[in-house]
Image 1 (tube, rainbow, N blue to C red):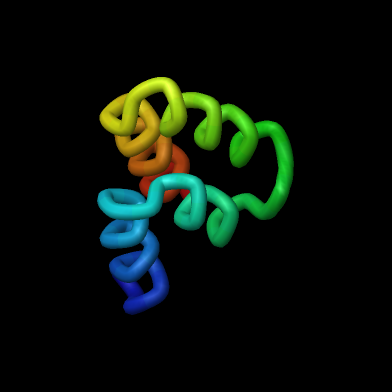
Image 2: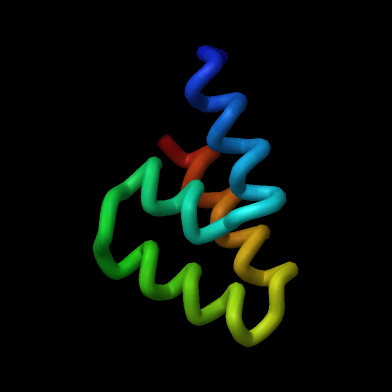
Length: 55
């Protein structure tokens, strides 16, 4: 596991939309994560971890 992935995992815990943006760019995944994070932080964090670990 490289350092960029570790930083992305840490970001997904504290700033989920930023982690998704860095992993996938601005698109559907980022918009979904922003909405999930606004509604409740925990689902946004889980979704961000899913996206980051999927790559």
